[in-house]
Length: 198
Image 1 (tube, rainbow, N blue to C red):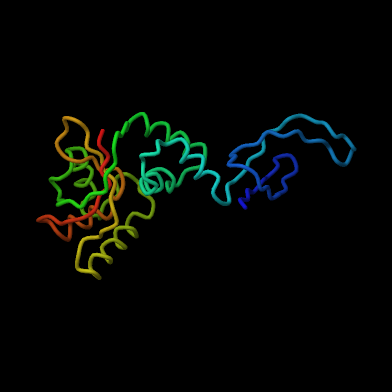
Image 2: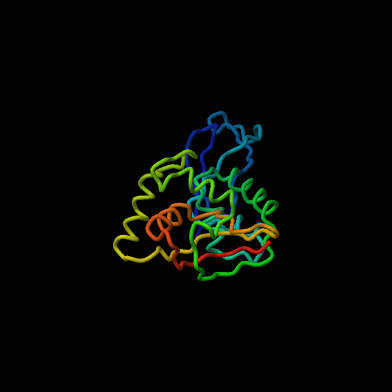
């Protein structure tokens, strides 16, 4: 059963609901103290506890988009639900991917397009954070530790797209593992990538 946390702005109390993938609910409130059973309609906020937002976002994205890509690129982003929905719409417009493939590729700095290369250089191996990425140093350290411990490139797939007429891959997700892989293996490495073909 799926539950949602329901906070009434009027009563400032929480209730558990077990219905649907809703984000916002409009309800009528009556004043229980005065016996009024009607009342104005107010907007109440529902914070997802399990599952509903994922199902909503997944239903918005074409079926050929792998769950891994939807989760890592869209769902796991630290945004409120309304902004996540906006992100899905923007991404689908900007990235009309016709096919996704999970590939093992030879990668290195020059595998990426010029914009991705510029962003990688700006981060200087993880020592700078010009884009104000949350927990950036900690995440770089975690990826560097994985590489150091295993002695090989991190094989968790990155997410890239190949735009028509553009040399190199555009990196969408997996910046920390990519930067640390490049740093540890400057002459290239083999790693997995979900590649979206536009």
